[in-house]
Image: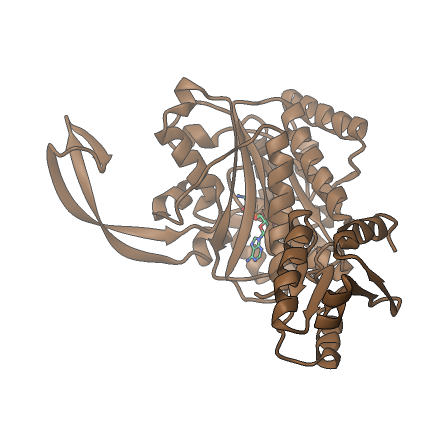
Length: 428
Ligand code: HAM
């Protein structure tokens, strides 16, 4: 990825980082390689991510027994090398939860707000917006079971949406919890068995292994329209949680729609689930997704601590900003044309002053003639060309050409910065 494409990715990451840090999130760095069991136990054995999309391979690992307790990389009481299987991370949440438990935070200081960013790997059929290696920027909050925390996640995404100037749709749902989910699952199974003859072959398989996924089948949309949904089965605490969540979204002006068919592709979700979709990235429209996972820390061996979070598909959001052509300009404000060695020395000083004042400046090669260099400045899409030759130096001026308006004037080198700042402030 080069130039504007790479820049769009950085813009998403930089803006996201600024916003989450203002919400008091701290950075966490997690490894790309983890044992495969971590994903099997969290993302879910029957999820597409684990079943079909992981890059996994055999590895050897030194396991150590210290005072009868199995640990990794500890001082040696008894040790052995064993065969293990590791996977390139398909998502960040399990690794963050593992690191959180390993650091003992679930017991010592459970309330944590963490963010991470980096490459994820899924063996999927590549297409626009869907890659085998892609970047996520994710956040995870631990120790907060309240709906206000779920709402804050969407408020942060809405802040990012506004900063990037995008139109996005926020879809929300509640998947219930261990109290009410079994009844919903049973109802969906009954419905599926009754309607088996109308369902596609993939759904036949889903029905027994992961019936919730019937609801996001792209083939059977019309058939599953009559299937039961989780909202009809929520227990009282889940219903209350969802009502508070919705009320807070309304109060904060986050525009959203309830999508009762939203089920998510990973198994750990409880209660709140959401996806943020864009019309600008083709069929792979979810640019951000997440939700609550209250049982996950405990399922991975930690204390019973609540969790909630989301991950931004960085390339997808970058595609959305590029299709709007906003904010990804990589053009310089000023291209400086120095026509002699002496002029280069002065050009370096002017360029340094402009850059110190955050004005993107490109000093063109002095090896070519004025005409070729003006063409180059045009090609770079620069706003101004600054022309310095021996004649200008002897008269104590520089020529500044407005490449958009094709006008030119001579000014003192010391006035260049003032002129550019003034013109750009008036948005000319
Ligand atoms: P996910 O829905 O699997 O959730 O992925 C989150 C986002 O990553 C998607 O909405 C999409 O934008 C992007 N994404 C996923 N697969 C690809 C791909 N092959 N190519 C490009 N972009 C992709 C999770 O990963 C959860 N860990 C999110 C979460 C965090 N839930 C709670 N905390």
